[in-house]
Structure formats: structure tokens, C-alpha cells
Length: 235
Image (cartoon, rainbow, N blue to C red; front, side):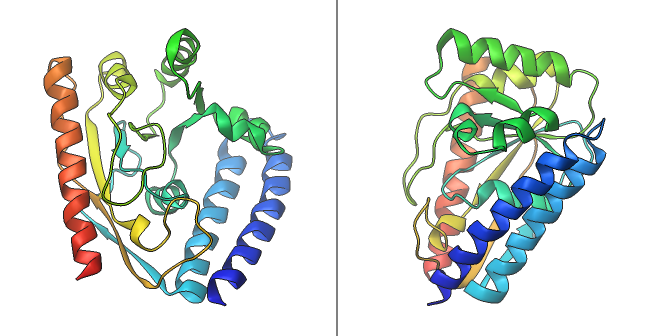
């Protein structure tokens, strides 16, 4: 019953905020639009706690207003919502599948989001390079999910090299982020489960590492810690 109530409210609130943010996107600059996006994310996190009994615990040092790349585990539809709610003003890399939702494409573009082709290839590289160019003078963090897709709890996909290109091109350290949110809000599933979801920020990885070492370090760090957090959630 709680899941049903949450989902009905979630989609209703998402629709209302979609319209509101589309209107805010008409205002020059990103200030009012990003305020609307953060307000939406914080409201959803509040709904998760009050309705579903999902409390979010943040561990480690949050990189608020720092020019870093946040590379996070992706196992829940709520990942991005929680991350934006807890880190403040961030930019984000999203797949072009997000453009299928009404008004979302317009809002994402006005927010400065880096929209890449989910299938990779030349188009994905071109859109990533465009995002890098637009981000050169920004100081807000950039959130990216290196797997590129949602994965079930206990599994993962090979990390894509776009995160390394972002880090080296912008000369920014990468903050690995592990999570077990999927134990309580799995992928895009209807059912939600009460408990404490953990978002853990870990030590930054230098962009000066060679590509092989960088990718191996990032993937091993995030995946290993996420498995530990999943076990913690199930204990």
C-alpha cells in the first residue's frame, strides 16, 4: 500500500514539477531552474522517508560546489534524485533515453546537462565533447554514472571510458560514490522497501593516472564498496 501511495504521488509531483521547471527554464540563466530541480529532488527524498520508510544516510565528504567529477553506482531510478538532493548544484551526464519524457529534454538542455547517446559511438563522443566545452568554466560538480545503465543489486556493467575523458579533459579529480539504494528502490520497480539507504563518497581519484589504471581503480572501488553496503542493508 505504501509503495502504491508513493508511486502515485511521485508521478503526480514529477508531472507538476516538470511543468514548473519548464517554465523556470524560460528565465535566462540556470539559477531559478536549478533551484526548482533541487526542490523537486528534496521533496521526493522526503516522500521516500515519510511514505516508504526509506531514510538516506550520507557518508564521506560531499563535494558541494567543487569542480570534481562524481562517478556513482547506478542501481535505482532514485539514484540521481537522491544525489542532486544531497549535493546541491550539480551538472549531470544523462542518456538520450531521458528525452522521451515530455518537457524533460527542454529542461535538461536549459540546465546545461550533457546528453549522450546510450549506444555509444561517434554521436556519444560528439555530445560528450560538447559538454566538456560547455563545462570548462563551470565550478559545479558533474555527476556521471559510468555503467551507463541501471543494474540489479549485486551486479554491474563494464564502466565506460567517458568518465576518464571528462576527468582528463577538464583536469578534475573523480569522486567515487558507492550506494545500496537499490536494496530499497530497485531499478524501476514499483515496490519500495523501508530501511536506511547509504550514499558513500570516497577518496578522489587523480585524473593524472593512465587510462587503464584509472578505470580499474574506479570500477573496483565503487563496485567493492557497493557490495559491502548491500550486505550491510541485508544484515
